[in-house]
Length: 566
Image (cartoon, rainbow, N blue to C red; front, side, top):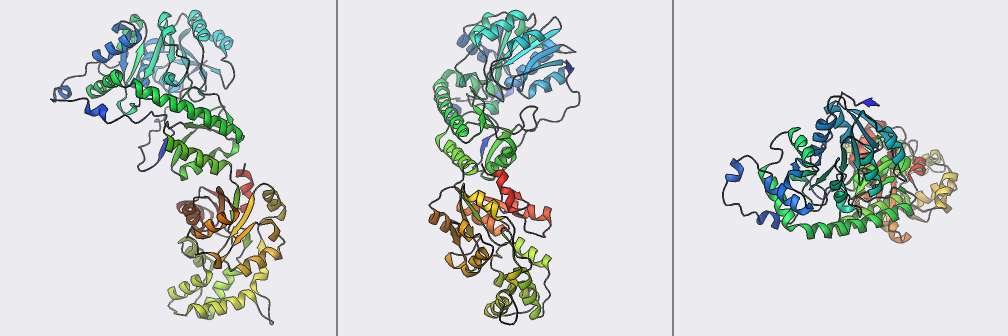
């Protein structure tokens, strides 16, 4: 047994992001119809002047569940209800028994109330009834059962609830926040058992999280204690009024939403399992999946597409696990599944050439600096990297000219190109600097990738120079397509990436690039942009540059992509 931690950090409550983000990290319910507000028909401000009266809503809920009103307490969301249970039943050192992983706020409320915690692990499979019963003794002040559980989505059945209630002399808290999504509703049974209190909420299936309205059902004696354990006016008058209106006329919308979510839940779980992701059986409005070492990558890749999910990797026993809320809306769910397919099941891997597969520091970069020097301007590696970081620098001839202009020298592009190419290609007197290029990944790795995916090159090089490099390093046969300078407008246009996709007949691709132009081209083409640090750059600066341009992840070298691919 442990006393819950006294040192607390604030719960992470982010401000809602704007625009077209999918907030699938919060388990919020459906958007209520505007008619819910129109039907209020407020004709005076008296409601705002008076202290709230929860009586009408408590009577509505009592009628709905067939109990007397003194067996209902309206609270500020389910959180307030749970907090009151800890304070009333276990405050000042009482022992609380519950399974983990579970609702994160349980430990917080235990700490706030001074309760001691007994945790029983339940990471899957049948509920550990015998182990839980073995922990219940005369010191037990409260037993907590969360069903459906958050974050796993697992449920308990009537046999478990009855057995726990019989074994415990202390109150049993049944957290039923997600029960509408489950086929197992234990509310009626709980109300027959004298020592069980049920916590429910309007924040999930009822779609009113912004109002902060929940409630507790239990014996009249338990409700009296809970009413005394908190403030007398926990819920505002407007929240009470809107929640009452929802109870009277919102059941049909809730049922429709629940049906959609159950369908999405079954579909998503099946798809994730097909993609080799372990999925917990869920009866809630979310799916918990074990993405292993790729969890952070999947989370960030989703976020790059404006989809937020909850990462539980820091929770004991849930390393690599992401919880994905189900939107209950066709277009949003299609968007989610499309992006997950792109992340978890690409059919093509595209590569930029320079800085990703080819080390060009002693070829193209030297050509830039030496050509500039011929015209009287000193250009170093730092200036070249800084220019590429700004974007719009996919053409090394044009980049050389712009660096000359920055140095106060005006030269035609054709003059720059002639001198640049003489150094790069060489002549009868001396070999070109391209002879100094080296392959940054092994043929063995490329062979492994080519056995599982179609591979392509999308480069700003002229085609002849691209094929020369691939042939010289004996990897030309591993690439199904090469899109070069003459095939499409330059990156950051999406055109060269789209050309590669069309030629390959592909719909889901990753694109590995080392410049902001590469990442912007990937984003505009609807493919997943993976940044690669070009050799010799400042790591922290370049990571930021690539991410700001749209990279969902940044690798130290291209070969590391093997860890991310399925």
